[in-house]
Length: 422
Image 1: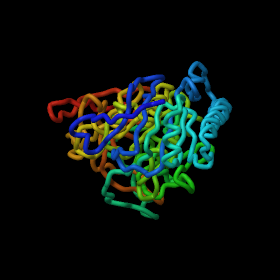
Image 2: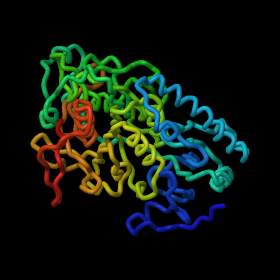
Image 3: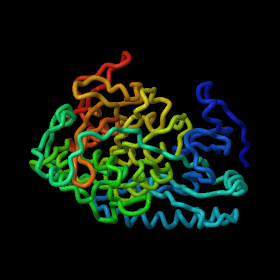
Image 4: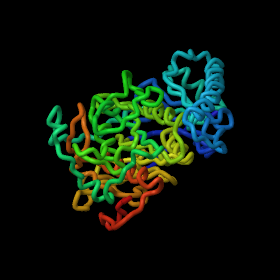
């Protein structure tokens, strides 16, 4: 049985976060700890939790299959499904031990970690938190896109009469190349993608394109479509061109039309990608972040992204637009092979005023200010944010078939940020 005691993480964070853990140790990449319902870190969803099981109890599919090699997405998915069925039965058996109704489960996670999103009453929470097979129980939290201004919108018939341009971010990334013949996919974990945008090669098959906010994977916000075009807009003489032009982009909708969502939904998106991704794929997460020491506590979000990257899928993450130290934001603070946290620069290669900083956590910089790209209803728009910087790197990785190169740097606060190029 676990005992609980409050631990002040720092003077700065004490007002925002109170966690309770004792004898905290790392096992199989997951911290064995339990969070009491007194924490105020982030925008907590009352009564909604993320439960993570120890790998010694339930191994995620990525762990079971780590020595397997797949060239077929469907073959991999079948193997993952077989493992997942057993994992879910084991999780449900644990719930039954404490008379927790299985219908309270919002989603199961079986590919990159073993866990679930679930609604729990206080008594259920206490019982489950003391189970020796449970590595952690975390609050589910709201995530919101940073506020961004949309300018210069072109839509309707006018959008199809635009002469194609190469935005400055593409030029700064080393120009565009043809990515349409490559087998690797770019998974856009975001607000969805405009499924019939004429300037995007969208994977619309519902086996892959998924929404975890209800409805279809079609974009009703614009953010995900803008991100997709930066990485992969088609070279077709209209609109804009992406870094890896014509690359296959897959919409994984985890944020609603208003740009809000939950960590549990993002985990569902990552879990879904983990069924079908193959080494060399790229997952772009240009999402909002939250303030708190998530990287020091090895959260479910962090663990899932690390497992995704370790399995051979490249991960590109936008640092926040808080003009603040990336160390104190999740997922900005994650360091790992195959995972790139990206800051924003201007077209003229100066550091964007809104971008988070700290070279210890930020790997690369790319253009994020005044970026023109694809938008809703077959249109185009200009907007700014670190969200726009990250997909430049996703496109570079797709174009190169591997790690990005760098050329030059941007200096900010006595640190040099290497510019990503293909």
